[in-house]
Length: 275
Image (cartoon, rainbow, N blue to C red; front, side, top):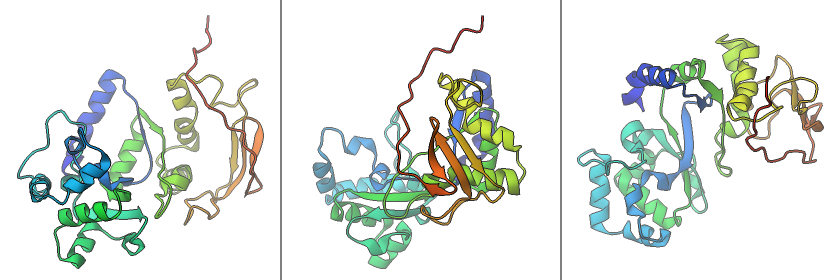
């Protein structure tokens, strides 16, 4: 969140001191479930339905209103971020839900205002109405901080996904955006360095042998793209990717996705002896 942006140099210093690496992706917003906004202690010893039912209780609603307004603090030691406080309700948007599709893409603050309730009340109501199955995006930092994190010496590139509804572009555009924006447009680093942060560096860090490098005997995981490689406008739009080989098998042929499955589960291995 914005309030923690000044702590980034200290975080980098601690990472360097302890030799800790990290992964990142090139976007200033994330994606998760709306239930993640509810502190973990409210789920303890309950089924999901029991927790959802409790959201109708005035005591629970008052507790969460106070928590999100910082009149009270979260339980110490819990692995939970108070995102409404850190990023603001206006930066939390509904990305997917089964019933009320007209809410997709709209902020929690906007939806609450339309219903004439507080954002907390709206969140609890929509979670109950949708059986807890609501996904969200949250914008949490400025673009320049994304670049700073990417340029840190311990940074590697990773991504993850929640499919359905308003897809986060990390699902389909993490690597194209790094190449097109950070390398081609912004010149933040060389193409070779960007590729190594996606391939050989994480493979070595995770102890995965013969991946992330091009050499005789290594796995033939290869990609061919041109200077038009770019973040696509949607999950089905073209990125400029020409060819993709996975374990030596063609997965993208002249820009066309192939249905053959060549991927496999990768486990940590003991690196070969260099003696």
